[in-house]
Image 1 (tube, rainbow, N blue to C red):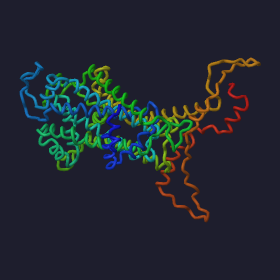
Image 2: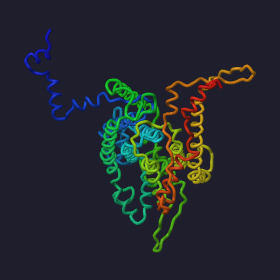
Image 3: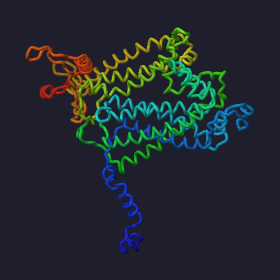
Length: 546
């Protein structure tokens, strides 16, 4: 039985699908593009799924956001509510709040969409945060991926502000309190603070323009920028090829894993629906942001237990922990340092993440490309810095909810505030020291494991009566994994006098770089790997007996 394709070939014409593909290839070059990328290899490690969770939750946010946009009215015009939610009937509120109530109670599937949208936004930021920490602790930000690291950092920051504009849109008592908080922060900026606040809010707080302006930023400006960054991020991942952990057969010039088609694509598709399903179950089970309980925003009221989402909590913690310092300048001009100083620290805490790859590259002087990942224990100083940053973040998160900690655990709010103030300086330092010691201890354990084997739990009695534990030798794959990491040598300034007896001029930056390099890789900052001679000497003697 002849097919249409066979008939087309007999007539000397290609099938319609092939002709369309040829037409597209002549203008877009899809054949060569597909040939180069469809068989792209992706390593198979569970930690790489963190970035996928962030990507899929971002897609879910976009899809649900489009649905919600169809029913939301971004207006601060006052209306009287006559919707399905009886306790609010007859209450005066903004159109934004009324339309959010309509979405929650009158639009089919509206409340579930609101819940999925909010939960997916939270999961996106959590996944972004954890994914960036995975990249940080494994050294995946090193050359040639510094720009991609900056793209990820910008996605995290833009995601935070997109979330802030998003939960401000319903104009409920909780989000209105957040807007008041932001206004106070802006007003603390010397000289131009009042002008900035008037420009943003369109007049005296709360004004009439802030919700429409946030709506434009939330649904158009910020997501558009983020979508462009996501595409650029993925293109660079494909261009640079994926990083991988050390192992047999894995080098800086290859990638060991599964091809994009059909294996990885099938797994990724299934994982997307798994993420979507879990977020949907969470959204259907746990209510978040029940605006009907809080009521519409009124400037003369503040909701109890007013807390921002977790990713903005540390910024509030900075302000709550900061003493209320003020300086009155001549002429009666007041500097509200209690708000302005945290406003300066906030971007610095974030910027520390962005600039770290360039600092480490400068300290090491390493200009090579890196595609093999570090185990966090083998970079103890970097790991300690990351742990210290996270500890600072959580200290400030406690400060941002000091009232809840006080009421739930029956503690003094002043005691909590002072603990946060002290912890701001002490906890990161202690975390740095403890983390570094743990990493060095794990390095020592790896060294002993390579030289003496793994403890088997089997006790053996020797002829002279001594009891020893039998150690099992490691496989070649395990030995490779434990010894594949590179150990840097600290930079040396060299002799102060050259060969002609002339004193060399050494700049301050050179001295600083050498000190930092010794702090990273000097004595006491890394445990030497076992040499081949040490391993042979032990294994050729009594072996791994004890």
